[in-house]
Image (tube, rainbow, N blue to C red; front, side, top):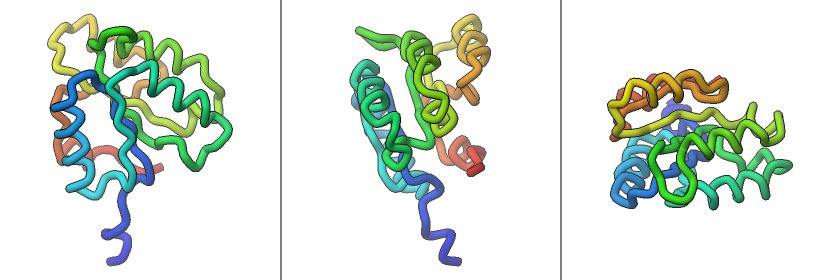
Length: 136
């Protein structure tokens, strides 16, 4: 019974340039007890910087990363390319899900083809999607 009160994950990261999408996602994550702490980034470069600065500190790294594809400055695909080059310990700690409104089959295939992407999800995230994400 007590386990049900504990969040599924300690830390979840959202990377999306749309502040409304960040707000909706963070509310769904909190409301469904999915993540204790939600790191919100509207800039993929800033999210990457956080990961790089904390590569050696597994305790503050997110277990789950939700990243959008289409963003200015650094796209989700560019983020994934940089993420692939981070330390193996960090890459193994963080499971990445691409969350996008795209219907472009090439984008979806490219996202699903990335070795570090668990799956692609159409925006917005919902309770059913969060329920399918299991703790290792």
